[in-house]
Image (cartoon, rainbow, N blue to C red; front, top):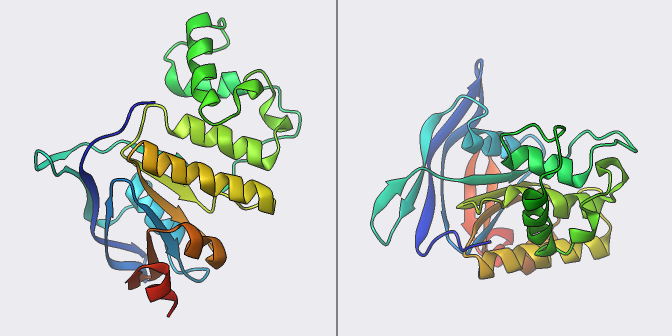
Length: 230
């Protein structure tokens, strides 16, 4: 995995979302710099998941999302990696990690044949997340922590400018959660990646966030965890 960039900033400008007459988000402005973990907190119904969907282009919104290369001072098309809060997977689902990964990066149907070159490429990328041994395992047989590592591995190939994680540790035990945040810290520092993460765990937010945003339809407060909590 190569570094995403040198100097860059993802700018979320004046984002607004309405469902009918209901205002879900109002004039949200957030700047996320490279190598920074920004964690969004807020009550249920505050608009956190809607904001992520707006960034991903999944809901209609006003405002804009731009990626600016500050070195050249140019706006460029942003590459986004995304890990959802949960995915519906049947227990003992026959689809393997290889099948799932290959289908996201290949134009050839994966059921035609297993491409040896692609197989080794995927295995090498999974190795960066400590899950190369899962490549032939069925998705439905993975633990919560294993599945999250696989999903993040998929979301970071090719290397995104912005990685979005929606409550990624729900259903994972405490040890798995600690391992997850340490992995995210490594991505942030080693690959200069901008990361937006939604979380309810204030203890972990305080420990790992570079910037915290308290959202309740609009940005109520942003700053360090200490500033926002106070």
